[in-house]
Length: 200
Ligand SMILES: *[C@@H]1O[C@H](CO)[C@@H](O)[C@H](O)[C@H]1NC(C)=O
Ligand SMILES: *[C@@H]1O[C@H](CO)[C@@H](O)[C@H](O)[C@H]1NC(C)=O
Ligand SMILES: *[C@@H]1O[C@H](CO)[C@@H](O)[C@H](O)[C@H]1NC(C)=O
Image (cartoon, rainbow, N blue to C red; front, top):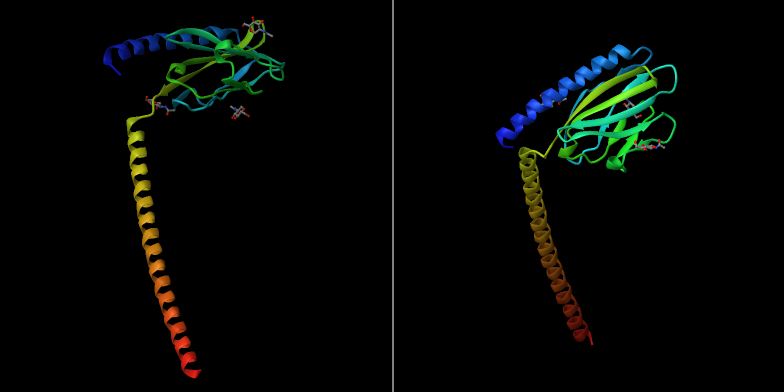
């Protein structure tokens, strides 16, 4: 990555983080009956991975759960549902999201553009809601990983080459052995025939 844009992105990321914190504080003041537990608030991933945004809520009634996504490219609603009913998934995430009754969602085959802040809001009734954030970093497959893969492939190729030459040598030996045996057999049968000739 070039240094300048990444720097700008970082400051933007920090301001977004502050914004998310302020929102959290504001919602916290409203919350009474709902509690929300997020075991892993930061997730590092590589492209094409399936990501589980794991949360667990507790409240008295059946709440409405909503996930939104915030990044440098803007804010977007992902999904909204009441546990036990059909989820209303936004057009942008259709076929890429599945929901769980504990409020978690899974996002399939993430790309670098999926990096950002995922905000979950659990609303029991107007004025009683709880809110949490999970930060997702998606990176390209690292060069070191590719290097490892290349080494592994080279190793496999070497093993295959050794096996193939072993097979070839074995085949050669077996062929020679067979020829020798056939030769011997032929000799013995001609001897027998000669012997028979003499007897006659
Ligand atoms: C994710 O990566 C950052 C550096 O990019 C690191 O500081 C952080 O500890 C990592 N988090 C996890 C959960 O692996
Ligand atoms: C929520 O449910 C999913 C699917 O059953 C599970 O994988 C995940 O661990 C749960 N989350 C928590 C925080 O218990
Ligand atoms: C699903 O969400 C869209 C946009 O947020 C909304 O217009 C629509 O009424 C919702 N559908 C249901 C069944 O809730």
